[in-house]
Amino acid sequence: MATGKILAGFLAPHPPHLVYGENPPQNEPRSRGGWEPLRWAYERARQSIERLKPDVLLVHSPHWVTQVGHHFLGVPHLSGKSVDPIFPNLFRYNFDLTVDVELAEACCEEARAAGLVGKMMRNPKFRVDYGTITTLHMIRPQWDIPVVGLSANNSPYYLNMEDGLGEMATLGAATRRAIERSGRRAVLLASNTLCHWHFHEEPAIPEDMSREHPQSYDGYLWDMRIIELLRQGRTREVFELLPDFIREAFAEVKSGAFTWMFSAMGYPEMPGELHGYGTVIGTGNAVMEWDLTRVA
Amino acid sequence: MSLVAAFLVPGSPLPLLRPEVPVWAGLVAAHAQAAAALAEARPDVLILYSTQWLAVLDELWQTRPRVQGVHVDENWYEFGDLPFDLRVDTELAQACIEATPALGVRSKGVDYDGFPIDTGTIVASSFLDPAHRYPVVIAANNLYHDWQRTEALGALAAAQAARLGRRYAVIGIGGLSGTLFRHEIEPASDHIASTADDALNQQLLARLAAGDAPALRAFVADYAASARADMGMKHLAFVLGALGEAYRGATTLGYGPAYGSGAAVVRFTL
Ligand SMILES: [Fe+2]
Image (tube, rainbow over the protein chains, first blue to last red):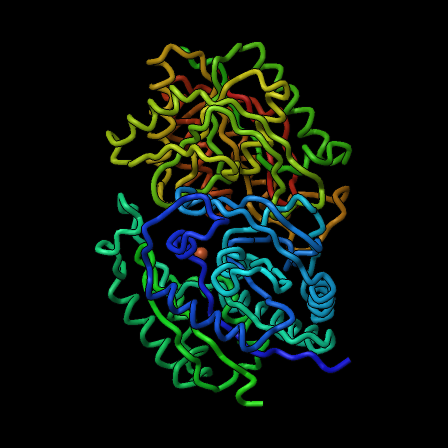
């Protein structure tokens, strides 16, 4: 078996509004579009997935929050209806996904070997969270690539940010080792919004783009600063700034997906490709790609 | 006064899913006592506020006439499934929704097939009303609402229930001290995470029993921080708001650990 490898990592945020704007058959509510620049950004990311042809997509989602350790979807097939508890008017999605249980188990074992608490989720009635589903739909709407789903342990919120994100870095390194020994060609998806200051009321027509704008100018400036550094491949600087960014922009990267992904990729100092940026109910979202096959 | 019963219950699924675990059996028995007291009170409706139903934008109220399904908790899935079948008093829920703008709070009804009913609501209703006899009103915990606003919402729900002539029970669903074990434990070895948390919980229960609302509020403000209390004890705020002048004490029917955190079943004296 050839050594597995990480082909690419994507910053792939999960506002359910993007699925709503697209009107796929799996989602019940209908829209008149909206958030096109971000949806076009995902179109570009979809082309990259088509070109990379990964064996598996791994996604770390802030909306599967676990308290006792880091959990992994561990049922070969999961289906059901996922309704977003915050935006049930926008996201009621019938999902049907295949899990790469072997790789998930390897990730869990490596996480345990690295001193983390790892758990396999074996309940077949489990309802997959909307963050995982939105990111997976936006990046690969065909649902024809097996997935590994990772929970977000609440350590960055519960312990303290530095120790919590340290755990996510350990989880990322463990994930990389599991991928290497699995022989899989993998793509990592960090399901995170950047600046997370949001509106407190939803516009009457959610997809009325005349109402969409950054909630916070300071938050917007932070997003631009981080994206610019990422575009220049100044990864180390981004991680030095990350605690301030999280505190001042209330950034969702606090939940760990971004750190997990970069740790797994070895914090490459390579320019990330920005597919697009846009706000959703005031929050800042970037779709970005780090194609590691280009440096190999 | 048509308030007929009021309780605090923990909302942890562990005692419900694993009632045979000795350390959780006390909470199971306490819920049974609460259920018996509730039946005796003959409520028309149960008004539920669960710390685990999180809202961010508006205050949310369940308005689907009947919600049923099987829920799997995102943390405790290995212990089993949580079937539920709830009938909603939509008239009362609607009245609450229409009344909240007076508090400066925008409310929305939630009427969607497959909407994720939270674990706490399911656990509390399964324990307290296993035969599905009473309709419910379910209010969300908006993360941006503080203690005062939550008390005001509890008072508002009670006032609307009274206005509609309901005999109503109010149930605040949430834990006490919030420190959970972060590693796997044998359920049989469960205990409150620290003696300090245990002592703080005991003090809270004593304050609840004493029936002095201002003193209780003052205590909770400190307790919430030092015991990392579940959502700042907003489930208690909701119940106190609903009780208003009727609050004069409470009895702890059961107290124990839920994976290190504090859990109690408390019956308010009416
Ligand atoms: Fe999110």
